[in-house]
Length: 213
Image 1 (cartoon, rainbow, N blue to C red):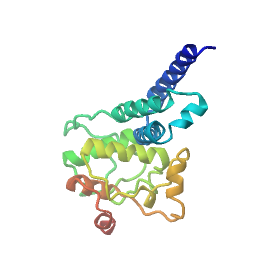
Image 2 (cartoon, one colour; image 1 turned 180 degrees about the vertical axis):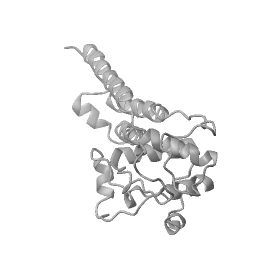
Image 3 (spheres, rainbow, N blue to C red; image 1 turned 45 degrees about the horizontal axis):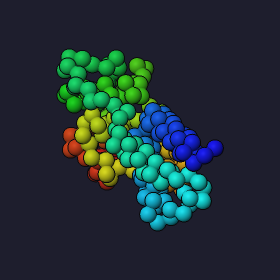
Image 4 (cartoon, rainbow, N blue to C red; image 1 turned 30 degrees about the vertical axis):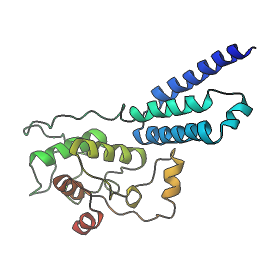
């Protein structure tokens, strides 16, 4: 195989890698991490360690990694949930077994709708502000991550102070998260009341919300 043929083969293989990652990586967080990793690695190989690509005889590798990472980063929110219009005030979730004096404003109705869509609200349980996602609704792992991502997008809640490992176990497939969560045994209830207040204030204040519970 001559040099030009090898370059064509490299281009095809690297383009196939790009397509695989572009269409198969749908998790926003994982997509962003891969993008940053590829960009940094590409720049490192391009400017500081170019001899690695030469030794491996993959001359296009540094530039390809950089471009693949850039494409992933630009489209990091490609598979994020689309914002939904708030449901009409007369629309309620199928769960109507609510405690007396439970808030019935449009914000709470939209929150209940999101809970029903993402987690599911059992009809046989009475729902209160003290109902917890992790203990009462058995929400954890990937499901919890998807719900909090949806909460952040749909309601514009600032989650910079939010620590998932205080309430949930990390997704089993995410080794990075499992390492960060190591040593966090007992979990704290994350209640509907905490979510409601976070939406009202547009931010997650861990101390204030947990004191409320």
